[in-house]
Length: 191
Image 1 (cartoon, rainbow, N blue to C red):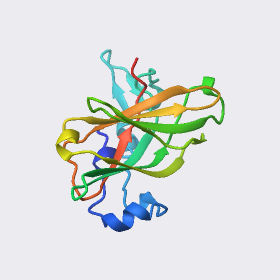
Image 2: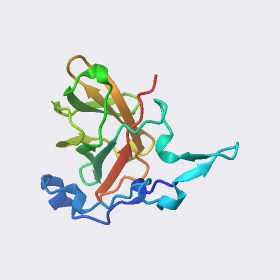
Image 3: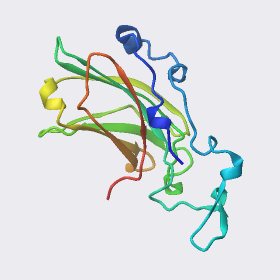
């Protein structure tokens, strides 16, 4: 089954309007393709190496394959003032370990992996499956420096204790003055 979620991005947006109108629902510009529901029901079982059928519903996922949710961010580089604009929009379908409690306070920590890393953090929100952050971070950094690094996001609980529950990252090779919208799959934190 192919996952088309990452490729279902919107076309060009008006940078100046969308930068400051962060309350407009981002789902207006996003089409979501759920890889499971797009498969016809007749193909929802497959034969394993012994020839017996196994329903996709009965396959259990190990910790590394579990779906931790997705993070929606927007990026823009304003070359006239050499600034990168990073907008953390929201986490969708977020899940966390039961050890973190029912409603932990959750924030997104970002890291630009420059030789001297740049760190930033969103405000903490009450944990639920869909959390809106709508926060923009602006840094003055030369474009040449950014194109060789990654932007790493760590999803962290703040209460009952600080813990990284998932992470995702994005290469910055194709930064431009046109705002780009990204849906990043959150995976288990690296050891």
